[in-house]
Amino acid sequence: MDKTFLAYQVEKKRDTFLGKVLERSISDLPKGNLTVKVFYSSLNYKDALSASGAKGVTRNYPHTPGIDAVGEVVDCLDNSFEYGDKVIVTGYDLGMDTAGGFGQYIRVPSSWAVPLPAGLSMYESMCLGTAGLTAAIGIDLLEKKNGISGKKAIVNGATGGVGYLALDILSMLGSDVTAVTTKLETKKELSIIGAKEVMSIEEFRSYVRQPMSKGIWDIGYDVVGGELLSDMLTVMKVGGSIACCGNVGGAIFSSSVFPFILRGNSLLGVDSQGIEHSNRTSLWNRLATEWKPYNLEQFSKEIQLKDVDEEITKILNGKQIGRVIIRLC
Image (tube, rainbow, N blue to C red; front, side):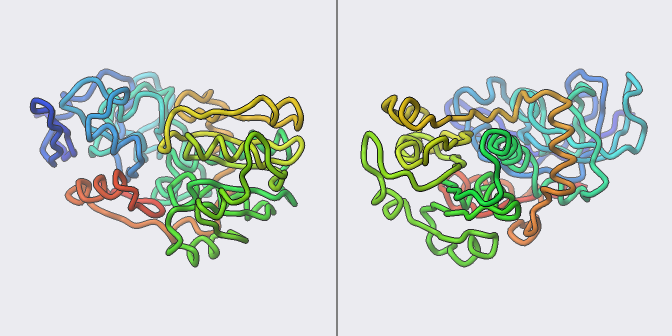
């Protein structure tokens, strides 16, 4: 008898996208050599875009979002994992056009999975998820380019999943971090995570002069894009670098060449979807050890599948703070 399971599925009806929890069958899952029973997933901005029909994320509906999943191996046809192994699956096509982690089972290529590191519980791994891996990729790039300890750092979009994890890790590694946010009511929480200073966007922009301003920060992490990234490029010190991973503020930004040819600044692109498997595994191991955030669970909350719609609305309206973890089993 074909086993059934619960999943949050989005259906397209004309120009409307509606999500609901329903029963699916294991036989409905896509082809792949690794089947995983999912214990936890997490809600990311890309999941909200997929659930709302945003162009460029998901092409085919009905669809189960969820770009993050952690669970236990049920079946592995190529024997790269054994039954019961705990694995993390993030990125690639999971939750985009491949049924994702908002279902109690997923089936994917085994090359998409990494072993759950010994230093992380399954719940903790989803407190990190794609957001944590994205933060780690950018911090790894900044570490190689500029170093982290003793540097003056700035994080734009500090209350979102990537931003608050980047802030936490940068502070833990010895940076003096300025957090920029639209949510000044979170100043206390950002200070607990490690921000030495919390600024509104308006306050940050008081330092900005085009085409170049006084150099203030050594390193930056931008998860917003658009005009804020343009502004950020003007305030970096000589040799400073910015890791860039987001576009919630817009996909287009402008800059003169001066930050690059007069200060030697660098803009470092962060791609967590297609990162090489070996590098992905290495960074997950660092996130489980020396880069494990001090405040990993403090600003995360757990929900059930029935609560997903409400949380999607929050994240699309810019109201999500920290991480939202979905318990599936």
